[in-house]
Length: 422
Ligand code: ATP
Ligand code: MG
Image 1 (cartoon, rainbow, N blue to C red):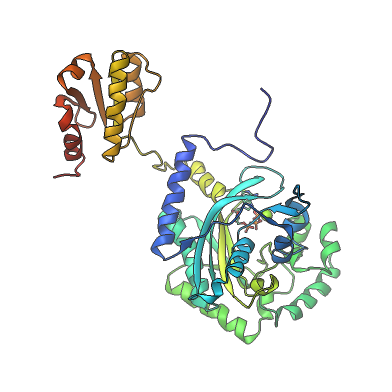
Image 2: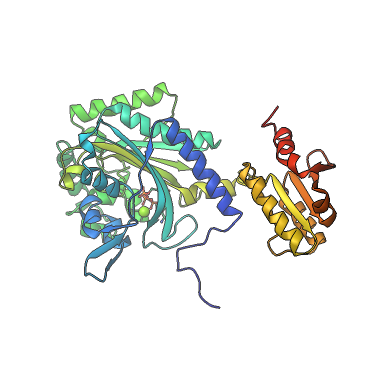
């Protein structure tokens, strides 16, 4: 067969999928402890949402979107990012009418037509948060520290938090004009020279070598911030200092999406090579209005789960993604024993234990091998004799013991041994 997963996509198979589940559920716990609630939006949206929300001159919209017409002739786009859909949903359901701010989190695949390489895929996975309906610096600090808390919870210490403020509708235009006249005099790359007039901020985000050097000398937006933005930015920094979170001010950090205002941040790690940003986000005070809604300032981040998990692989860190089974059941005998064993399997499961048995009904020897390979805490063996006498053999792998137990007592014994009943 020569059918393969499409270029830039990949299958996540067991045991890797166990690690993914473990990582996702642990992150979910961290969110919940901070009173964030889950939102699930569609995998595709009307194209216009991203053109208006992300911005027509961004790399995402200009080059990376999976856009097609559906059978009804509507222009549809597979979501390339999570913020615009969340804000669309917030507006559509008039969540601004409820108590503010909304603290939301999401998990799911994003689609971008990019050149695939390690840590860069056409379908990648993100988790992210959005706090909508407030613009205090506490919200910025809450979002940024949450990102750091996730890294710390997973014992990742080798990161740098890059921080910038990109101003607001009042102060940014002055800076943009400065930036335009600066770049016009510099030998920027072909692509950038075309977009200087339309969106000079994008040049700061350009990854080509010639632009990377030039942007170091470019005017710095923090020198142009209005008093309100400037105060906001200082307060965010103070709050981070209070939480003892080190950061580095990066005046070239503008992020790849047009909707950002004021705080922008990225967390980079040395573990990842070229694709070194695990998490990025910022404040988007104008996005809701851009989408036709009332003013609803917000702040969020998106974290690349593929890259996050790659970091553990690179460090060869074991994530305990694999929860061992409680019970593996071995059935020795013909059909009647197998059927009866299958009933017992369900009894064990109903009692709340994780349990499995060989569904291919292989030889006893192979079933015992499977039990060892799977590494269940207990092996329960049922043969013809046991069935007749209403007993089972219970092997406790931790203790290295084997005992005959009345079938009616099995659940109670298992509970006692696992400490559920003292
Ligand atoms: P980059 O500069 O690496 O292209 P970005 O600024 O386009 O990243 P965001 O839009 O901020 O990325 O997305 C949030 C996070 O999602 C990134 O920090 C990264 O970890 C991850 N990410 C983005 N694009 C991809 C991709 N194509 N494959 C894997 N992860 C990705
Ligand atoms: Mg990108």
